[in-house]
Length: 252
Length: 257
Image: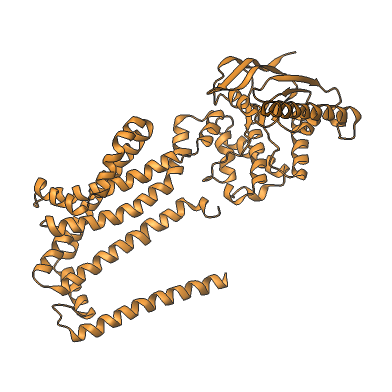
Protein backbone atom coordinates (compact mmCIF):
# COMPACT_ATOMS: atom_id res chain seq x y z
CA UNK A 1 0.00 0.00 0.00
CA UNK A 2 1.27 3.42 -0.95
CA UNK A 3 1.00 6.00 1.82
CA UNK A 4 0.11 9.50 0.59
CA UNK A 5 -0.04 11.21 3.99
CA UNK A 6 1.56 10.09 7.20
CA UNK A 7 1.73 11.60 10.67
CA UNK A 8 4.53 10.02 12.68
CA UNK A 9 4.53 10.37 16.48
CA UNK A 10 3.12 13.88 16.56
CA UNK A 11 3.30 15.82 19.83
CA UNK A 12 1.88 19.29 20.37
CA UNK A 13 1.55 21.43 23.50
CA UNK A 14 0.04 24.91 23.93
CA UNK A 15 1.62 26.54 26.97
CA UNK A 16 1.25 23.71 29.49
CA UNK A 17 -1.72 22.03 27.87
CA UNK A 18 -0.88 18.81 26.08
CA UNK A 19 -3.05 18.71 22.96
CA UNK A 20 -1.66 15.84 20.93
CA UNK A 21 0.42 12.99 22.28
CA UNK A 22 2.23 10.51 20.09
CA UNK A 23 -0.34 10.61 17.30
CA UNK A 24 0.54 8.39 14.37
CA UNK A 25 -1.76 7.74 11.45
CA UNK A 26 -1.66 7.49 7.71
CA UNK A 27 -3.79 7.62 4.58
CA UNK A 28 -3.16 5.18 1.74
CA UNK A 29 -3.71 5.84 -1.92
CA UNK A 30 -7.37 5.13 -2.74
CA UNK A 31 -8.67 5.63 0.80
CA UNK A 32 -10.97 7.85 2.79
CA UNK A 33 -9.60 7.99 6.34
CA UNK A 34 -11.31 9.72 9.24
CA UNK A 35 -9.97 11.04 12.48
CA UNK A 36 -12.87 10.94 14.91
CA UNK A 37 -12.83 12.61 18.29
CA UNK A 38 -14.88 14.64 20.74
CA UNK A 39 -14.69 18.45 20.74
CA UNK A 40 -11.46 19.73 22.19
CA UNK A 41 -9.50 16.58 21.41
CA UNK A 42 -6.97 18.41 19.24
CA UNK A 43 -8.48 17.48 15.88
CA UNK A 44 -8.21 20.97 14.46
CA UNK A 45 -4.65 21.20 15.78
CA UNK A 46 -3.78 18.19 13.66
CA UNK A 47 -5.53 19.79 10.67
CA UNK A 48 -3.48 22.95 11.19
CA UNK A 49 -0.31 20.90 11.36
CA UNK A 50 -1.22 19.14 8.10
CA UNK A 51 -1.93 22.52 6.48
CA UNK A 52 1.40 23.86 7.82
CA UNK A 53 -0.44 26.64 9.66
CA UNK A 54 1.25 25.57 12.88
CA UNK A 55 4.28 23.41 13.64
CA UNK A 56 4.28 20.23 15.69
CA UNK A 57 6.64 20.11 18.70
CA UNK A 58 7.87 16.64 17.82
CA UNK A 59 7.18 14.11 15.08
CA UNK A 60 7.00 14.15 11.31
CA UNK A 61 4.38 14.82 8.66
CA UNK A 62 5.07 13.17 5.31
CA UNK A 63 3.19 14.07 2.15
CA UNK A 64 3.33 12.33 -1.23
CA UNK A 65 4.99 14.71 -3.73
CA UNK A 66 2.32 14.10 -6.35
CA UNK A 67 -0.51 15.37 -4.17
CA UNK A 68 -2.59 18.37 -5.08
CA UNK A 69 -4.45 19.03 -1.85
CA UNK A 70 -7.68 20.92 -1.31
CA UNK A 71 -8.40 22.10 2.23
CA UNK A 72 -11.82 22.54 3.81
CA UNK A 73 -11.76 24.67 6.94
CA UNK A 74 -14.27 24.26 9.74
CA UNK A 75 -15.66 27.77 9.23
CA UNK A 76 -15.90 28.95 5.66
CA UNK A 77 -13.04 31.20 4.68
CA UNK A 78 -14.32 33.31 1.84
CA UNK A 79 -12.96 36.74 0.97
CA UNK A 80 -15.90 39.01 1.90
CA UNK A 81 -14.96 41.63 -0.74
CA UNK A 82 -14.98 39.14 -3.61
CA UNK A 83 -17.98 37.51 -5.29
CA UNK A 84 -18.34 33.73 -5.15
CA UNK A 85 -16.94 33.62 -8.69
CA UNK A 86 -13.87 35.54 -7.67
CA UNK A 87 -13.46 33.49 -4.49
CA UNK A 88 -13.19 30.35 -6.56
CA UNK A 89 -10.71 31.92 -8.92
CA UNK A 90 -8.61 33.18 -6.01
CA UNK A 91 -7.81 29.60 -4.95
CA UNK A 92 -7.78 28.17 -8.47
CA UNK A 93 -5.37 30.59 -10.11
CA UNK A 94 -2.22 28.92 -8.82
CA UNK A 95 -3.33 25.53 -10.15
CA UNK A 96 -5.40 26.02 -13.31
CA UNK A 97 -5.45 28.44 -16.23
CA UNK A 98 -8.35 30.88 -16.46
CA UNK A 99 -10.52 28.95 -18.93
CA UNK A 100 -10.03 25.66 -17.18
CA UNK A 101 -10.73 27.25 -13.79
CA UNK A 102 -13.91 28.84 -15.05
CA UNK A 103 -15.25 25.64 -16.61
CA UNK A 104 -14.51 23.63 -13.44
CA UNK A 105 -16.27 26.23 -11.29
CA UNK A 106 -19.25 26.43 -13.63
CA UNK A 107 -19.70 22.67 -13.67
CA UNK A 108 -19.43 22.41 -9.87
CA UNK A 109 -21.99 25.15 -9.27
CA UNK A 110 -24.24 23.65 -11.91
CA UNK A 111 -23.98 20.18 -10.40
CA UNK A 112 -25.06 21.55 -7.01
CA UNK A 113 -27.74 23.90 -8.40
CA UNK A 114 -25.93 26.97 -7.15
CA UNK A 115 -25.49 28.86 -10.46
CA UNK A 116 -27.59 31.72 -9.19
CA UNK A 117 -25.14 32.77 -6.48
CA UNK A 118 -22.07 33.18 -8.72
CA UNK A 119 -22.19 36.97 -8.56
CA UNK A 120 -23.23 37.15 -4.88
CA UNK A 121 -20.99 38.33 -2.08
CA UNK A 122 -20.46 35.95 0.87
CA UNK A 123 -22.40 38.29 3.19
CA UNK A 124 -25.50 37.57 1.12
CA UNK A 125 -25.34 33.81 1.80
CA UNK A 126 -26.43 31.78 4.82
CA UNK A 127 -23.88 29.96 6.98
CA UNK A 128 -24.77 26.57 5.51
CA UNK A 129 -24.53 27.90 1.98
CA UNK A 130 -21.09 29.36 2.69
CA UNK A 131 -19.93 26.00 4.01
CA UNK A 132 -21.12 24.32 0.81
CA UNK A 133 -19.14 26.86 -1.20
CA UNK A 134 -16.12 26.19 1.01
CA UNK A 135 -16.28 22.48 0.10
CA UNK A 136 -16.83 23.18 -3.60
CA UNK A 137 -13.96 25.68 -3.53
CA UNK A 138 -11.59 22.99 -2.28
CA UNK A 139 -12.69 20.69 -5.10
CA UNK A 140 -12.38 23.45 -7.69
CA UNK A 141 -8.58 23.18 -7.90
CA UNK A 142 -9.00 19.63 -9.31
CA UNK A 143 -7.30 18.05 -6.31
CA UNK A 144 -6.41 14.41 -5.91
CA UNK A 145 -6.55 14.71 -2.13
CA UNK A 146 -8.81 16.58 0.31
CA UNK A 147 -8.14 17.39 3.94
CA UNK A 148 -11.33 18.48 5.67
CA UNK A 149 -11.99 19.79 9.16
CA UNK A 150 -15.64 19.12 10.14
CA UNK A 151 -16.79 19.73 6.56
CA UNK A 152 -20.46 18.96 7.26
CA UNK A 153 -20.78 20.54 10.68
CA UNK A 154 -22.86 23.61 9.88
CA UNK A 155 -25.21 22.30 7.20
CA UNK A 156 -28.76 20.97 7.50
CA UNK A 157 -29.53 17.25 7.26
CA UNK A 158 -30.66 17.35 3.64
CA UNK A 159 -27.56 19.24 2.49
CA UNK A 160 -25.42 16.95 4.62
CA UNK A 161 -26.71 13.89 2.74
CA UNK A 162 -26.23 15.61 -0.62
CA UNK A 163 -22.71 16.75 0.15
CA UNK A 164 -21.77 13.35 1.55
CA UNK A 165 -22.98 11.74 -1.68
CA UNK A 166 -21.12 14.32 -3.76
CA UNK A 167 -17.87 13.64 -1.86
CA UNK A 168 -18.30 9.87 -2.23
CA UNK A 169 -18.96 10.27 -5.95
CA UNK A 170 -15.82 12.37 -6.33
CA UNK A 171 -13.87 9.72 -4.47
CA UNK A 172 -15.16 6.86 -6.59
CA UNK A 173 -15.34 8.56 -10.00
CA UNK A 174 -12.42 10.97 -9.86
CA UNK A 175 -10.14 9.10 -7.42
CA UNK A 176 -9.98 11.93 -4.90
CA UNK A 177 -8.66 10.53 -1.63
CA UNK A 178 -9.68 12.14 1.63
CA UNK A 179 -8.62 12.74 5.19
CA UNK A 180 -11.64 13.84 7.19
CA UNK A 181 -11.65 15.23 10.70
CA UNK A 182 -15.00 14.99 12.48
CA UNK A 183 -16.80 14.51 15.77
CA UNK A 184 -19.72 12.71 14.08
CA UNK A 185 -19.53 8.86 14.24
CA UNK A 186 -22.25 8.51 11.58
CA UNK A 187 -20.39 10.65 9.08
CA UNK A 188 -17.18 8.74 9.80
CA UNK A 189 -18.66 5.28 9.42
CA UNK A 190 -20.71 6.07 6.32
CA UNK A 191 -17.74 7.51 4.44
CA UNK A 192 -14.46 6.00 5.56
CA UNK A 193 -12.29 2.99 4.81
CA UNK A 194 -10.56 3.38 8.12
CA UNK A 195 -11.26 5.39 11.29
CA UNK A 196 -8.91 6.54 14.03
CA UNK A 197 -10.61 7.44 17.31
CA UNK A 198 -8.97 10.18 19.34
CA UNK A 199 -9.45 10.67 23.10
CA UNK A 200 -9.55 14.18 24.53
CA UNK A 201 -6.95 16.13 26.52
CA UNK A 202 -4.46 15.06 25.45
CA UNK A 203 -5.45 13.63 22.09
CA UNK A 204 -4.24 10.05 21.93
CA UNK A 205 -5.36 7.49 19.36
CA UNK A 206 -7.31 4.95 21.41
CA UNK A 207 -8.94 2.78 18.77
CA UNK A 208 -8.81 2.01 15.05
CA UNK A 209 -11.56 0.64 12.84
CA UNK A 210 -11.45 -0.81 9.35
CA UNK A 211 -14.77 -0.85 7.52
CA UNK A 212 -15.17 -3.53 4.91
CA UNK A 213 -18.68 -2.76 3.68
CA UNK A 214 -18.76 -1.36 0.11
CA UNK A 215 -19.33 2.42 0.25
CA UNK A 216 -22.34 2.18 -2.07
CA UNK A 217 -24.06 -0.26 0.32
CA UNK A 218 -23.64 1.70 3.51
CA UNK A 219 -26.80 2.84 5.26
CA UNK A 220 -27.72 3.25 8.89
CA UNK A 221 -29.86 0.10 8.56
CA UNK A 222 -26.89 -2.05 7.58
CA UNK A 223 -26.09 -4.32 10.57
CA UNK A 224 -22.31 -3.94 10.49
CA UNK A 225 -22.48 -0.17 9.97
CA UNK A 226 -25.00 0.20 12.79
CA UNK A 227 -22.81 -1.98 15.02
CA UNK A 228 -19.67 0.11 14.47
CA UNK A 229 -21.50 3.39 15.05
CA UNK A 230 -22.82 1.99 18.33
CA UNK A 231 -19.39 0.79 19.37
CA UNK A 232 -17.92 4.25 18.75
CA UNK A 233 -20.72 5.99 20.60
CA UNK A 234 -20.06 3.68 23.55
CA UNK A 235 -16.36 4.57 23.51
CA UNK A 236 -17.32 8.26 23.73
CA UNK A 237 -19.76 7.55 26.57
CA UNK A 238 -17.01 5.73 28.44
CA UNK A 239 -14.74 8.74 28.01
CA UNK A 240 -17.41 10.96 29.57
CA UNK A 241 -18.02 8.47 32.41
CA UNK A 242 -14.32 8.31 33.21
CA UNK A 243 -14.21 12.05 33.31
CA UNK A 244 -17.23 12.34 35.64
CA UNK A 245 -16.00 9.63 37.92
CA UNK A 246 -12.58 11.24 38.15
CA UNK A 247 -13.91 14.68 38.92
CA UNK A 248 -16.39 13.49 41.57
CA UNK A 249 -13.58 11.44 43.07
CA UNK A 250 -11.38 14.52 43.29
CA UNK A 251 -14.21 16.60 44.79
CA UNK A 252 -14.87 14.17 47.64
CA UNK B 1 -39.36 50.79 -4.27
CA UNK B 2 -42.18 53.32 -4.44
CA UNK B 3 -42.11 53.98 -0.71
CA UNK B 4 -38.33 54.34 -0.94
CA UNK B 5 -38.73 57.08 -3.58
CA UNK B 6 -41.43 58.93 -1.63
CA UNK B 7 -39.26 58.72 1.46
CA UNK B 8 -36.36 60.20 -0.47
CA UNK B 9 -38.48 63.02 -1.89
CA UNK B 10 -39.79 63.74 1.60
CA UNK B 11 -36.23 63.96 2.93
CA UNK B 12 -35.15 66.32 0.16
CA UNK B 13 -38.22 68.50 0.68
CA UNK B 14 -37.69 68.70 4.44
CA UNK B 15 -33.98 69.43 4.04
CA UNK B 16 -34.74 72.22 1.55
CA UNK B 17 -37.38 73.64 3.85
CA UNK B 18 -34.88 73.88 6.71
CA UNK B 19 -32.45 75.62 4.42
CA UNK B 20 -35.12 78.07 3.18
CA UNK B 21 -36.15 78.94 6.74
CA UNK B 22 -32.57 79.92 7.59
CA UNK B 23 -32.37 81.93 4.34
CA UNK B 24 -35.58 83.79 5.21
CA UNK B 25 -34.34 84.60 8.70
CA UNK B 26 -31.09 85.82 7.15
CA UNK B 27 -32.97 88.07 4.65
CA UNK B 28 -35.24 89.39 7.41
CA UNK B 29 -32.44 90.42 9.78
CA UNK B 30 -30.17 91.65 6.98
CA UNK B 31 -32.82 94.24 6.17
CA UNK B 32 -32.74 95.63 9.68
CA UNK B 33 -29.03 95.43 10.45
CA UNK B 34 -26.11 97.37 8.99
CA UNK B 35 -24.52 95.35 6.11
CA UNK B 36 -21.15 95.82 7.80
CA UNK B 37 -22.42 93.47 10.46
CA UNK B 38 -24.78 91.25 8.47
CA UNK B 39 -24.73 91.51 4.66
CA UNK B 40 -27.79 90.24 2.79
CA UNK B 41 -27.71 87.14 0.55
CA UNK B 42 -27.71 89.43 -2.52
CA UNK B 43 -24.75 91.42 -1.21
CA UNK B 44 -22.96 88.19 -0.43
CA UNK B 45 -23.60 86.91 -3.93
CA UNK B 46 -22.27 90.17 -5.40
CA UNK B 47 -19.15 89.86 -3.26
CA UNK B 48 -18.73 86.34 -4.55
CA UNK B 49 -18.87 87.62 -8.14
CA UNK B 50 -16.37 90.32 -7.19
CA UNK B 51 -13.76 87.92 -5.82
CA UNK B 52 -14.35 85.65 -8.78
CA UNK B 53 -13.83 88.44 -11.33
CA UNK B 54 -10.75 89.79 -9.57
CA UNK B 55 -9.11 86.37 -9.85
CA UNK B 56 -8.77 86.20 -6.06
CA UNK B 57 -11.12 83.24 -5.77
CA UNK B 58 -9.15 81.00 -8.09
CA UNK B 59 -5.72 82.18 -6.93
CA UNK B 60 -6.35 81.68 -3.21
CA UNK B 61 -8.36 78.52 -3.58
CA UNK B 62 -5.56 76.85 -5.55
CA UNK B 63 -3.01 77.78 -2.90
CA UNK B 64 -5.22 76.46 -0.10
CA UNK B 65 -6.01 73.23 -1.95
CA UNK B 66 -2.33 72.68 -2.69
CA UNK B 67 -1.35 73.14 0.94
CA UNK B 68 -4.15 70.85 2.13
CA UNK B 69 -3.15 68.13 -0.29
CA UNK B 70 0.56 68.37 0.53
CA UNK B 71 0.04 68.39 4.32
CA UNK B 72 -2.58 65.69 4.18
CA UNK B 73 -0.62 63.58 1.70
CA UNK B 74 2.41 63.73 3.97
CA UNK B 75 0.31 62.72 6.97
CA UNK B 76 -1.19 59.85 4.99
CA UNK B 77 2.22 58.62 3.90
CA UNK B 78 3.91 58.90 7.31
CA UNK B 79 0.75 57.72 9.12
CA UNK B 80 0.59 54.54 6.99
CA UNK B 81 4.26 53.76 7.52
CA UNK B 82 3.90 54.35 11.26
CA UNK B 83 0.80 52.13 11.44
CA UNK B 84 2.65 49.32 9.64
CA UNK B 85 5.82 49.65 11.72
CA UNK B 86 4.07 49.97 15.07
CA UNK B 87 1.90 47.01 14.24
CA UNK B 88 4.95 44.89 13.48
CA UNK B 89 7.08 45.97 16.44
CA UNK B 90 5.12 46.01 19.66
CA UNK B 91 7.93 47.70 21.60
CA UNK B 92 7.78 50.66 19.22
CA UNK B 93 4.01 50.78 19.68
CA UNK B 94 4.24 50.86 23.47
CA UNK B 95 6.92 53.56 23.21
CA UNK B 96 5.01 55.78 20.78
CA UNK B 97 1.42 55.46 21.92
CA UNK B 98 1.66 58.13 24.67
CA UNK B 99 3.40 60.54 22.25
CA UNK B 100 0.62 60.07 19.69
CA UNK B 101 -2.00 60.72 22.36
CA UNK B 102 -0.18 63.91 23.40
CA UNK B 103 -0.08 65.10 19.78
CA UNK B 104 -3.75 64.26 19.42
CA UNK B 105 -4.88 66.11 22.54
CA UNK B 106 -2.79 69.26 22.05
CA UNK B 107 -5.14 72.02 20.82
CA UNK B 108 -4.40 73.02 17.21
CA UNK B 109 -3.93 76.63 18.26
CA UNK B 110 -0.82 75.63 20.27
CA UNK B 111 0.67 73.94 17.21
CA UNK B 112 -0.17 76.97 15.14
CA UNK B 113 1.47 79.37 17.61
CA UNK B 114 4.58 77.20 17.62
CA UNK B 115 4.57 76.90 13.82
CA UNK B 116 4.43 80.68 13.43
CA UNK B 117 7.45 80.99 15.73
CA UNK B 118 9.35 78.19 14.00
CA UNK B 119 8.47 78.78 10.37
CA UNK B 120 7.15 82.35 10.23
CA UNK B 121 4.18 83.44 8.19
CA UNK B 122 5.79 84.02 4.86
CA UNK B 123 5.56 80.64 3.25
CA UNK B 124 3.71 77.38 3.02
CA UNK B 125 5.37 75.65 5.94
CA UNK B 126 3.11 76.89 8.72
CA UNK B 127 -0.20 75.68 7.23
CA UNK B 128 1.33 72.44 5.96
CA UNK B 129 2.81 71.70 9.38
CA UNK B 130 -0.52 72.32 11.09
CA UNK B 131 -2.43 70.05 8.69
CA UNK B 132 0.20 67.38 9.08
CA UNK B 133 0.22 67.42 12.86
CA UNK B 134 -3.57 67.55 13.18
CA UNK B 135 -4.38 64.77 10.70
CA UNK B 136 -1.47 62.40 11.40
CA UNK B 137 -2.98 60.88 14.58
CA UNK B 138 -6.38 60.42 12.90
CA UNK B 139 -4.85 58.55 9.98
CA UNK B 140 -2.54 56.54 12.19
CA UNK B 141 -5.23 55.44 14.67
CA UNK B 142 -7.63 54.38 11.89
CA UNK B 143 -5.08 52.44 9.87
CA UNK B 144 -3.54 50.83 12.92
CA UNK B 145 -6.94 49.55 13.98
CA UNK B 146 -7.54 48.37 10.41
CA UNK B 147 -4.31 46.38 10.34
CA UNK B 148 -5.15 44.80 13.70
CA UNK B 149 -8.56 43.77 12.38
CA UNK B 150 -7.23 41.91 9.35
CA UNK B 151 -8.63 38.37 9.47
CA UNK B 152 -5.62 36.08 9.82
CA UNK B 153 -7.86 33.10 8.96
CA UNK B 154 -8.05 34.43 5.42
CA UNK B 155 -4.28 34.71 5.20
CA UNK B 156 -3.97 31.08 6.39
CA UNK B 157 -6.49 30.04 3.74
CA UNK B 158 -4.58 31.92 1.05
CA UNK B 159 -1.30 30.30 2.08
CA UNK B 160 -2.62 26.72 1.91
CA UNK B 161 -3.62 27.49 -1.68
CA UNK B 162 -0.08 28.66 -2.48
CA UNK B 163 -0.83 32.40 -2.60
CA UNK B 164 2.37 34.47 -2.53
CA UNK B 165 3.04 37.68 -0.57
CA UNK B 166 1.92 39.87 -3.46
CA UNK B 167 -1.46 38.12 -3.73
CA UNK B 168 -1.95 38.31 0.03
CA UNK B 169 -1.17 42.04 -0.08
CA UNK B 170 -3.46 42.80 -3.03
CA UNK B 171 -6.35 40.42 -2.32
CA UNK B 172 -6.51 40.41 1.48
CA UNK B 173 -4.40 43.12 3.10
CA UNK B 174 -5.48 46.12 1.01
CA UNK B 175 -9.19 45.22 0.62
CA UNK B 176 -9.57 44.74 4.37
CA UNK B 177 -7.96 48.14 4.95
CA UNK B 178 -10.14 49.97 2.42
CA UNK B 179 -13.01 50.79 4.85
CA UNK B 180 -10.48 52.16 7.35
CA UNK B 181 -8.64 54.14 4.67
CA UNK B 182 -11.90 55.77 3.66
CA UNK B 183 -13.01 56.57 7.16
CA UNK B 184 -9.63 58.24 7.82
CA UNK B 185 -9.90 60.04 4.46
CA UNK B 186 -13.31 61.36 5.28
CA UNK B 187 -12.57 62.47 8.85
CA UNK B 188 -8.99 63.50 8.14
CA UNK B 189 -9.71 65.60 5.08
CA UNK B 190 -12.38 67.64 6.88
CA UNK B 191 -9.87 68.29 9.66
CA UNK B 192 -7.13 69.10 7.17
CA UNK B 193 -9.29 71.58 5.31
CA UNK B 194 -10.31 73.39 8.51
CA UNK B 195 -6.71 73.41 9.74
CA UNK B 196 -5.44 74.98 6.51
CA UNK B 197 -7.95 77.80 6.73
CA UNK B 198 -7.19 78.30 10.40
CA UNK B 199 -3.43 78.38 9.78
CA UNK B 200 -3.79 80.75 6.84
CA UNK B 201 -6.07 83.02 8.84
CA UNK B 202 -3.48 83.52 11.58
CA UNK B 203 -0.17 82.59 10.08
CA UNK B 204 0.12 83.15 6.34
CA UNK B 205 0.08 85.84 3.70
CA UNK B 206 -1.70 83.89 0.97
CA UNK B 207 -4.60 81.47 0.63
CA UNK B 208 -8.30 81.48 1.44
CA UNK B 209 -7.68 81.82 5.18
CA UNK B 210 -5.51 84.87 4.55
CA UNK B 211 -8.21 86.38 2.26
CA UNK B 212 -10.70 85.78 5.06
CA UNK B 213 -8.50 87.54 7.58
CA UNK B 214 -8.03 90.51 5.21
CA UNK B 215 -11.78 90.79 4.69
CA UNK B 216 -12.18 90.60 8.44
CA UNK B 217 -9.69 93.37 9.21
CA UNK B 218 -11.13 95.63 6.51
CA UNK B 219 -14.66 95.00 7.73
CA UNK B 220 -15.64 93.59 4.30
CA UNK B 221 -18.23 91.36 5.88
CA UNK B 222 -19.87 90.59 2.53
CA UNK B 223 -16.56 89.16 1.26
CA UNK B 224 -16.14 87.23 4.51
CA UNK B 225 -19.56 85.68 3.91
CA UNK B 226 -18.70 84.95 0.28
CA UNK B 227 -15.55 83.09 1.31
CA UNK B 228 -17.47 81.18 3.96
CA UNK B 229 -19.86 79.95 1.29
CA UNK B 230 -16.98 78.97 -1.00
CA UNK B 231 -15.42 76.94 1.83
CA UNK B 232 -18.64 75.16 2.72
CA UNK B 233 -19.37 74.31 -0.90
CA UNK B 234 -15.83 73.01 -1.42
CA UNK B 235 -16.13 70.69 1.59
CA UNK B 236 -19.54 69.43 0.49
CA UNK B 237 -18.25 68.73 -3.03
CA UNK B 238 -15.31 66.72 -1.71
CA UNK B 239 -17.44 64.78 0.77
CA UNK B 240 -20.50 64.02 -1.36
CA UNK B 241 -19.21 64.04 -4.91
CA UNK B 242 -15.79 62.45 -4.35
CA UNK B 243 -15.35 60.50 -1.11
CA UNK B 244 -18.87 59.12 -0.55
CA UNK B 245 -19.46 57.75 -4.08
CA UNK B 246 -16.04 56.09 -4.24
CA UNK B 247 -16.49 54.72 -0.73
CA UNK B 248 -19.89 53.24 -1.59
CA UNK B 249 -18.41 51.63 -4.66
CA UNK B 250 -15.39 50.03 -3.05
CA UNK B 251 -17.26 48.79 0.03
CA UNK B 252 -20.38 47.52 -1.71
CA UNK B 253 -19.65 43.97 -0.49
CA UNK B 254 -20.50 45.21 3.01
CA UNK B 255 -23.93 46.48 2.07
CA UNK B 256 -25.76 43.24 2.49
CA UNK B 257 -24.02 42.06 5.64
